[in-house]
Image (cartoon, rainbow, N blue to C red; front, side):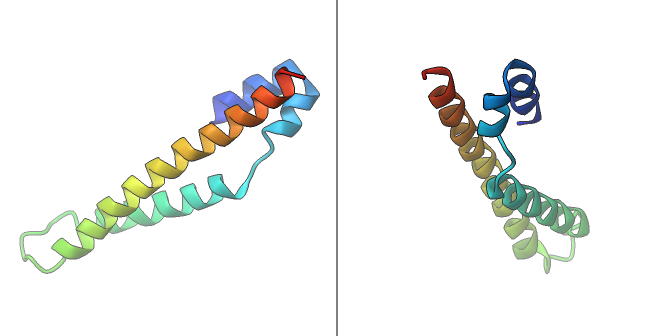
Amino acid sequence: MSAVREWAASQDSRLLEAVAVNNLGKWKTATQMTALTILLATRDCSQGGPAILAGSGVVLLYISAWLAVWSLVVYVRKIGKVLLR
C-alpha cells in the first residue's frame, strides 16, 4: 500500500488526495499486530492449552490479509476515478 501511495504522490496532487490514509489501513494494522502478538505468545503449543488461542491468531492474520486486499481495491478505485476524469 505504501508503494501505491508513494507512486500516486509522485504523479499528481489529485492522486495524493485520492489515496489519503483511511481507517481500513488502521484496522488492518491493528488486526495484524494483534495476530502476531498472539502467535508469538503461543508459539509453543506443546501443552495443548493455547491451541485455540493460536488458531484465533491465524484467523486474525487472514482477516488482516483480507483487509489489505480490500484497502488496495478501495485505493485503485479512487485512483481510477481521478485518472479517468
